[in-house]
Length: 211
Image 1: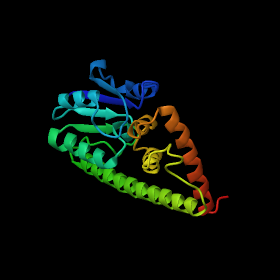
Image 2: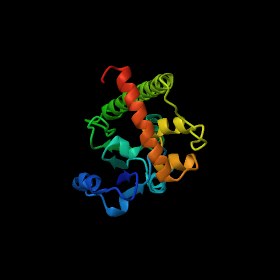
Image 3: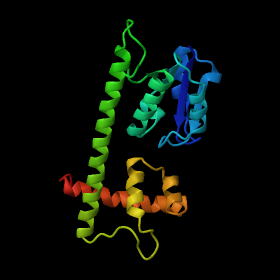
Image 4: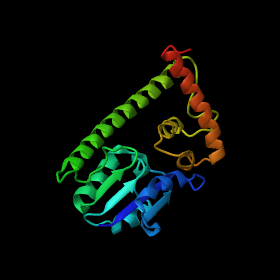
């Protein structure tokens, strides 16, 4: 049995010290700690893939929190099943005691509870995602009805600007990824993105009676 740890931050400007400090009590060798400096939108990450190839049945993978593993719960569920069922390794999430697949008192309770908790978290994440998208769509519609314009203005913004902003606002894309998708410079996209968020927030606030 070998213990591994996975650490992730979105950019190299962010600090990994807090995650490393949480791992100290487990005395994991540095060679077994894998770190990625990129978005958690998917699992195509060099350090994660390298670690995955080293995992064997009976090993333990430790992460500080579930969002360090990934952001999309549908993908997390698939990866979780691959690690715990196909490879046969265990997973321990330090910030949530129930997400610990290790056997407790010689039973399968740990695996069963962890799987159930993750399924519930995935359900609520999907529900929240749909709710946020619905609110954003309603906010855009309400703003347009009041004469506010979104999308292409004076041939400066791409036609899918609103959709990409919504994905960025939800966390599916970083601002740099969104700018690349729209073939815009990061500074230009970020300026328009802030204006877009302000319009949506104003619209949503009026819609729900908070102004």
